[in-house]
Length: 524
Image (cartoon, rainbow, N blue to C red; front, side):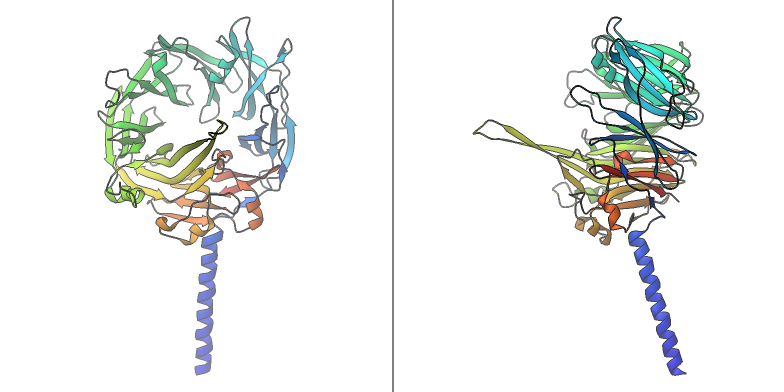
């Protein structure tokens, strides 16, 4: 009997150990049922990718080879299967229209309605015009019509094409194009806006003169509502005598639609506080929320977060909340430095302003530092420079719908690279329900460390692992390896080529020298 009890006790202990090991392995290696597709050959080295959209028939990608001295490179459309992520076809995008011996120049392909739409341009030097063309494609990568001219913009040289901008509405039913080339830096800024529907029919066009000199004015961010109303977040340089002590920038929200008689302009200022970075969001009834980071001592620093709500029916700012960071929160970034008692955090750039269905908001920012170190060889006079890229911690500030800060989270991440433009650094971002997801390359040893002061930097992509961090609605988060398959690590994860393709999935991309691989991460 005693022997039976002993054996039973031993079996229970063994079961507990096995369960604990399974839990530990799952916590360290498998986050979600992540799945990868097969290897796909890139059209050429230096190819860049853009996700056009996700259909039942497959996921469409646009790839573009790097430009040469006498060639602008080639553009391809590729479709991969939704389930297996294996390629279904790769087709070169060839533009048929030409002016004399000069063809149109490809600009962008994006989803509008149920079809991919291509936009291309041509500089007509005889008329001093940039002509904009559009063309509809089917899901087999074939054009359904010839390119047609849909708009033109005044220009004096071909290089001004770079000032052409494209903004799609959130529901992908319309496209806004605008031309930001400054006509005269000492005169008021004038910009041409054209709005097209999913059939490339022009809904309206407007030339707007802003009450700001061209040299002082820039468009910071743009949003297009499904109704066709345009929202601009603008940045204006204020000319004044004492530029060192004064807040020299003014932000504003400008909104308009096809009604030429109504242009609304709302100034966004925080008195003596500096706006470090800002983004904005539009709610379902057209009200505007601006949020970002502010500083009491100057740019490139952040003392806390701010929240501003604009009521468009009342034509005024109805809420303005400034919330400084708590001392303990700021101390996480300043420990071990002479600024450890300072309540400012430095070098954070805002990436996202998330608007949740319950009306709350989340501000997402990442610390980015760029250093260039140059050395002069006094024997030859040659100068050589080394560029260092640092993508570090992610800060998330959760705000209630009235702007009150609910919590602030610090997600530790240390990425350092040299002369690579930081292509393997930063993170891919996704939202599902009230949770946020961050995927990034990480030093494998850091998964076993809880104290961020002991974490090591990810300095080389070779040997790094991919980590997914889930940030919950209460501010807690978990970090886990995306995959335990070492074979997949041969494909170096590139965050900037990854995107959210549905409400509950992220499309991830990894590269080698001549191949790429796609993966899908389901979000809970």
